[in-house]
Length: 128
Image 1 (tube, rainbow, N blue to C red):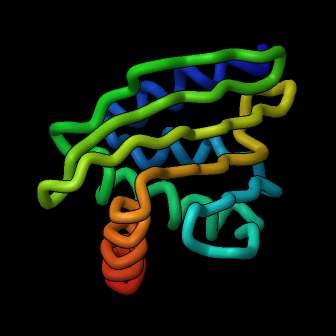
Image 2 (image 1 turned 180 degrees about the vertical axis):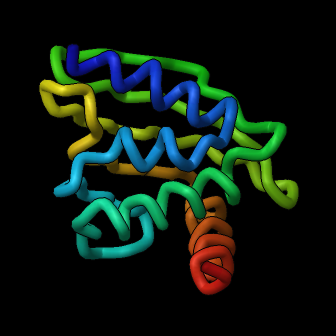
C-alpha cells in the first residue's frame, strides 16, 4: 500500500495537479532541500517547496532515468538541463502505510547545478 503513493507522485509530475499533490502529503511531511540546511516540516511548507521545485525543475527536459524501491520508499534519479547547465539528482521519498509522503529529500549535482537551483528556487518561492 505504501508505494501506491509513488504512482500518485508520477501522476503529479505529468499532470501538475496540485490537489493530488496536497492529498499525497502527510500532515507531518518533511522536505529536505539540497540548499536549505534545516528540514522543512509540515504539509504547508512541503507543498510550497514541491510545487516550486516542479516549476523550476519539471520543464520539458525533465525526466526520471532510474528508480530504486524499498518496502516504504523509493529513490528516483532525474536529469534536466536549465540555462545550459546539466543537472543530475535524486528524489528520496518515504511513504506512510497509507501511501502518503512523510519525507522528501532532494540531492543534486554538480555544484553549478546546485547554485543555479538555489537562485531559481529562491525566486520561485518569493513569488508564492
